[in-house]
Image (cartoon, rainbow, N blue to C red):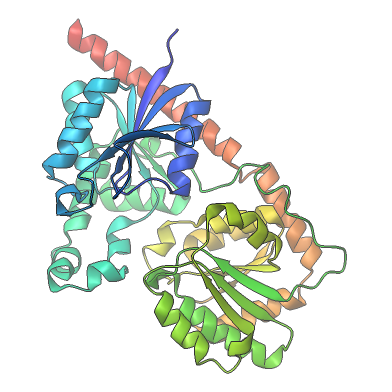
Length: 401
């Protein structure tokens, strides 16, 4: 029996995106022949194998408005249709909503089932990202006319399945858009059980001092509140330090704030890092930082780092979003703080320092080993795709009968 085929449509360049890689490799492990459609960047080949994933790129050699991933762009419409004709996939998965409508149209014409891999509340995310708030035209479309909200509504109601990263998103889609609950299967941002197994455990009686953030530095991560909160905590605790590893559109803003802090000598910003450096960075971490603005965007998503720190046995502070508080009730390996509240950040840091490090570290590792792991999510993904593919085969058989 020939293997099934899957097309994954991703609106940005590749490499690299952690969830794109994880889902595509999971599809391969489930027996699918996978093709990834991604936006082309300067100097990249039209087609190549990236980390074992066949990647086909869309657009001119130099990114331009011609390859913007928006509904109605003929460049993407034609590329999606060409990929469907070439590959004849059994199922198509599109990441989030930017290209969901052209995928829906093309799959509808060919009777191919399709799903949305929904990593975030995209309309609300766009209202927090600086690049969409910097220009009057984009503010009008995103904030006033709420065009992304309309696209999302059409997309999620048309999709054959949706794979959100948390249960809170599932509830929102049912509540706000009337989606059928049985079409929504959460596939979390979890690591595999073995991914961080080599990160060394801290010795008995260990009391950590180093708080570390690893990830993109943009406005919705609210690192300004973390820096201000650390400065308050450092006043009462001379042992602690803060590391921020990562780059992004808000790095200069965060750096200026750090340089003006009273305890700036204990704050370090490294800039961008490569994915291969994470093992070292996590090994050097005592306490993780999972920071967000607290709003409707962040209430409906979960960062990879939430599970990564747990898997590494590194207790962490986290912004008190609904999704993270819900999970922490079962994981018991961190302390929440209120968004936009430096004093709350400081209190969470103090609580971790006073807490039982070994017990929290063990609870985090156990939670990943027993429940919150990629192996369990892949089983859910595979079962959902089996149902989708069976649905597609039935519909095509009915059309030709």
